[in-house]
Length: 335
Image (tube, rainbow, N blue to C red; front, side):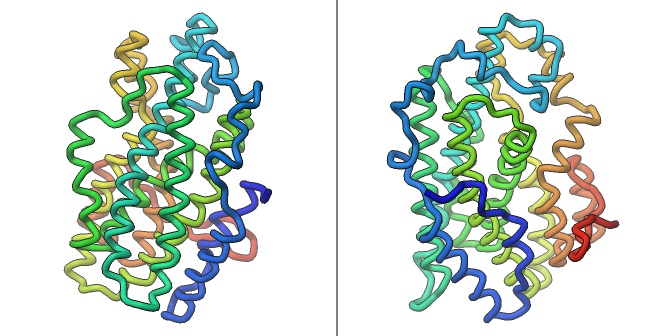
């Protein structure tokens, strides 16, 4: 079976899409990669392996210091089994919200594919992505089920609002793929940081994250290339509107994906001052927010979605940072 970490987003996003031929070439390579490297939820994860058992008191679930809540003194002062339960609840919640987001994503992708013409290269890739997202949802839900915890996912008020998302492609496919990146980039950033830091201790979590990272690299790559190809060609008024909506969407999505839900806070009696310490107005949390959307923000600037007004919106939601230009030969970022 292929190594889930062998597909890297950075390799794919460097493709050039100045013309239609190059853009189509990228989509065809992504489609081929989906055939060559893919995973199935119930074939490639050994759910019945004794070491993959989900025990809420297992110390392998204790949150690492890279997690904002895990770094607080309050959390570190809890009994080990409580730390483990909070850690497992946090992991399971991110998976539950992830599968709910991917449910919206799949419906939106199918709405987009519904109107594509014959011989459209996007049609095949979108169906590949939808298939992969189905397997992600199955493995996420199976994980949640095995925790035995009452994991809810999105808050009810947000869940109602989110039902609009699958209909966005009927209005603007560009806006829909901004929404896609708003949900995928923050969680991809957090998962990559956690894996890179060697902080994932439980083999089931490690297996799921590596599969998800590998396949999400293609999904993120397609959304980025679609926007790179389409946005510079749309009406300036539509492009300005897209630039206004993007920081608002990213500001909401990033916090949903990375901050703990109210149900978890209430269940474990986490003090409000601890939540403020971890997720309030502090440099560490603000930096995390900016970093987790950096690639989307830089893309928006690159393709003409940032002007004086939209920049102020990025600043207002706490996500603005000057775009980074990549030095292709050295790999070093420059301002």
